[in-house]
Image (cartoon, rainbow, N blue to C red; front, side):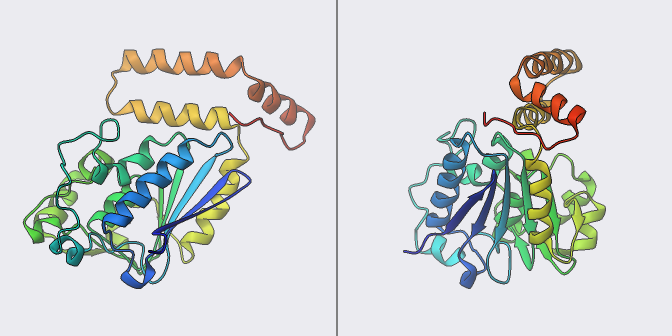
Length: 261
């Protein structure tokens, strides 16, 4: 079987691609396993600074491969088992991008249906082509989104999200943008995502990871806890070599030479 996911890392930027383009990157069991493995592999890299997530072919991801599901590929997969921290395997392929230590940028084109909307929802920043079609299709099949969507979509306007889920209808990129489902539109989402990733990767890797930890705590922590966490993160950063290098590079008007974490 060909790899369902490809990874290429250059200068701290991981170019991750769903590689089942002939099936619009539909998610079968092999895709679930490959995405979870990719997240684990990337999480172990000290040189990683940012991830760009995209799909090969004519679409980002068309959602669950219903033929594979009907054929019993997912039989025996116990959704109650927390196999990846707080998540099960199905949730990890989306939630895992949100909990990865570095920023993740999704570049979306063609279609993002069902599970595809949840995978892109795991990204910190989501760029979409203006012609992209979206749909949260699960209710059409008599189920609900269960790949982490309800935990990942907290920044989306809720009444619109409810309509999309209850009706399972398609919506376009303009609607997605207006509701906060995507960050912005781009005629070349992957190219723009890679360019943005290179800009992000030029920053202190310690500061990037610290900022992502703080963002991760925002949804579940009260003001007192967040204030204390901000201070703890800042104190750790200020004691670090990469902070000193950032200050020196700015004062000397040169490019910084940061150390991997």
